[in-house]
Length: 320
Image (tube, rainbow, N blue to C red):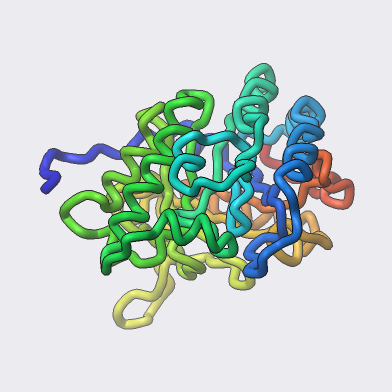
């Protein structure tokens, strides 16, 4: 049993950023649950064509202080090589890209002072039957095989990227009871794997849509804060429902953070709100000591969708 005291990372830099961007750059659509017809060669050509310098310039022009990108999601295609993953799933040719897009983005962002953060589901790719079976077998109620395999996979990435990656947003794990177990594997051992290359890296665990926003575990540094249709303005009511509580900078010790969509869905347009509302909601959360991340789409070439650039520029001008 793990007994020594856990210390959360310092989130001051994150709070001072006030806002940032997340993008779903995937082989399929966000949250897609159907297998796709794509070859590893097709995926590698797409990743090879990603314009990291062009994206860095666009973000710098809009004064974006940090940027999240998906490493992968349900399809089993990932935008960085990983030997541990390939050894476990034994799929050839690999669905992990040859190019380490994360490392290349970090190099492109560094001269502009943009911090790179990454998104990854907390387990096996849902629509890759072979990978899912091999990552999860043998099975047990606590999913210990999956947890240990996934910790091994993320540890490799974390060690390779080191301090070039400043944070992780982990989508799931959804079975919170399994990860709250006092013995590893659990939330703590998962967080330790994610921080293996950078102990100051920020970690959040998402348990699906959470309105109002709250913290999942003491082993996360900031709230995942995923919201969509409801623009959360308070953590809930007082027991007598006489007044709204106010958000504060920390929720159960985790930095207040909200993640929502600038478009009509994750990675899709059109732009959802007028500039004034996007800016105003960001400022409202900022006034409570919180941070807001806005999801917007990228083109196949890795550049910001042109229809979102005016609002991104307006947000940067107002908050930058």
